[in-house]
Length: 278
Ligand code: ADP
Image 1 (spheres, helix red, strand yellow):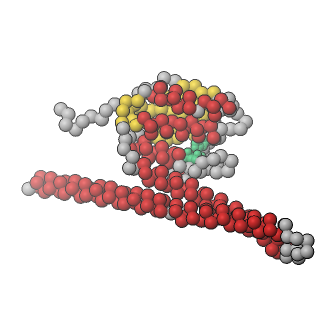
Image 2: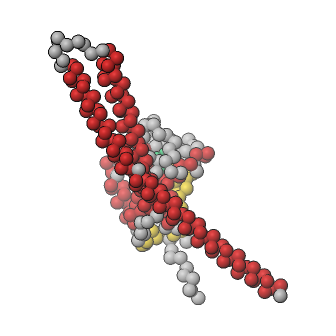
Image 3: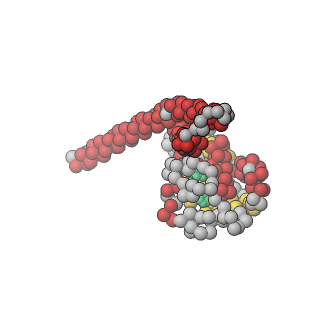
């Protein structure tokens, strides 16, 4: 009797676990739809604000020209009107436009992120040496212009979606370029190895590094450690993490915070064992 109760309990546990997993997947989908709808629908009022902002800039310029060319017989504009037209209004409009542009970039980022879950994956065996060579060739101009030294070691193959893996590689190389130290020549080393059925690749740079307490944060959406001076939205690593997870891969970083960073990417090297196997 005791054995039967035990098995019944285990079966019940397995069923409720399955139900929780299903509920979680549904909630995730719901959230994704909300993010998609919000980021999509908020863009049109923004376009409106942008358009009318431009009209106001033009109206302001017209008023300035009108006042500037007024006949000498006319009274000079009141100083406070002149001040508003020449400085306060154009400056406020510039701030509004900058705010709108930033918000548009954030919404475009959110939209890109929420679309990832819907994109279909084409998993194939990837020749990572060829993929890296292509990525480096596409970035040759930027790498040459800072005289970057890039060393590549032979890389093992892996299973992944060509477009998405190539995007991760170029994002890591692009970050090595962006976060280089101004006082050092940039050196990048790309390595790879196989370990327990996974292919692990690393991109090492001698840039500004990332202190330990920020290493988890950089994978969060829109999180940037050095927002001044370098372009970006703090989305690249978040997207890399998400796309890799969908391909049964991972991404992480190691850095002592002073002598550069090494980003690691792991992807399956072999087909997963099939459940219907012997
Ligand atoms: P972005 O580069 O647009 O800010 P990412 O998601 O690619 O977005 O990177 C997030 C943050 O992680 C960056 O803003 C930067 O602070 C930090 N980071 C990424 N790569 C490196 C690197 N190679 N060296 C130092 N810091 C880095």
